[in-house]
Amino acid sequence: MDKPLLSYYEALEKASADMLAVARRGDWDAVERLENVSSRLITQLQQASKVTALAAEHHQAKSAIMRRILANDAEVRRLAEPWIENLDALTGGRSRSSQ
Image (spheres, rainbow, N blue to C red):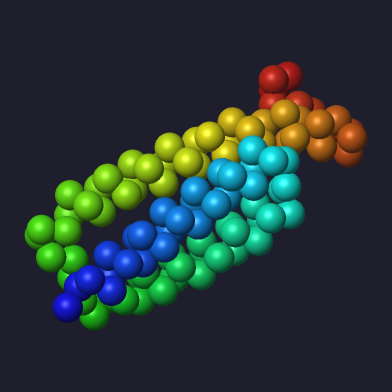
């Protein structure tokens, strides 16, 4: 019954891995599109989790997926830092390192 719920986590993991892949290529428009996909998946997951609970035997899989998503997200943020600082400089804003 809760396999579809776990599938949302798996889809989020795939989106985060795809986001990391395009961030490594410097395709920030694709990163933004995948962020929108992730946002929709999160909304769907929240709705699905209101009507069904994740079985205890899937909690470990969910935790592993969440760790991988967080690692992917951290790497995307690390890759985005120079781009964000460059954008700040171009728009006259302060870079994060000078704050």
